Image 1 (cartoon, rainbow, N blue to C red):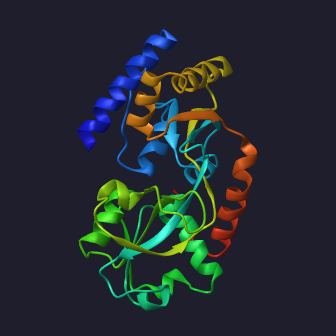
Image 2 (cartoon, rainbow, N blue to C red; image 1 turned 180 degrees about the vertical axis):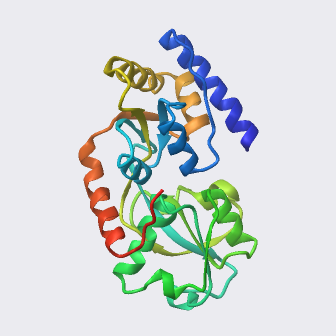
Length: 261
């Protein structure tokens, strides 16, 4: 998987270099905190990041959301709390004192949304679960649940409508043949974004966004986008779509459910 991502990123940056007439170099960061650090040091000028991380990082530097990923004609998805289908767990109440796997405190689908979802239904995650693991990626969360290191995990998921089959999820990407049981679905979460450092000239920001938008208009471009972002295209981002998330983060802090980056 890391090698495939690296090759796909090289293909994408090569195309962007040609389209922009300037060198574009890709960098894979090991954590969300590492990505923010690279932006702060001006070693990264454009970044692919989840919306919750953008909202938090804006408190430390000027960032501008440019474009939003589109998957299955949708610009939003949900988070799920899931268990191995072979387990005896049928509800969140069954998981009292058990181990939960999260992605990262700044992950919308892997922490923030499911945690607040539980709090809204009267379950305090900090006291309900016995152990909380932070595993840095959705794939590692899924693996922890499937291999028994965690009893329940949080990851992203998409379905066309209520009761419809799940068509994309962290556990499908890791092992589509393994069965899981989804216990809870959260509300809608905005898709990930391409973000520009706010100190960049607006002309450069627009040119970079345009180059990525154009990729969605050709088969070759869509292949490049799929290889790196698992998206078929991008669309212009609106700051209005982040307003509910900004409110959610404020509520999370008021309840002590979110740490600083």
